[in-house]
Image 1 (spheres, rainbow, N blue to C red):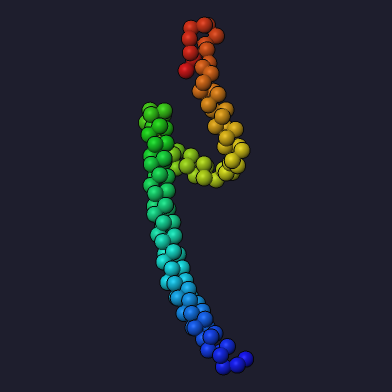
Image 2 (cartoon, rainbow, N blue to C red):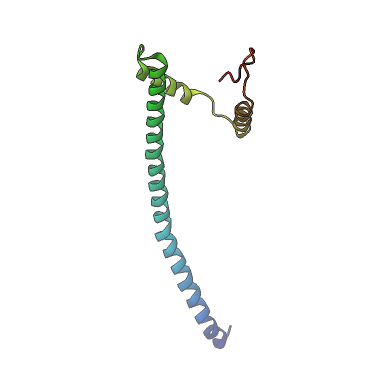
Length: 121
């Protein structure tokens, strides 16, 4: 290469070095920020999930308390029920929608009493 070609490539090499330095610096700054944001979001979702679990357990406790008319320890039964629900197999999307559609069909088709006196439920 002669001197003229070297001089013409110097600005291109300088621009490439500056661009790569800026790109590397921005990656080193943004990746930890994104990771921190994701961890904060996950923590927030976990807090909300724990709140929902507590509310569901309290609702089960109230329903069991009403159903047993306070004769049994509804809090213990609610804990057992919530633990059982957590240990059961998770539904696939197909099973979820089959169950949901089945529930919707049951809701839309009222069950009539055999005596002909109207709805059973």
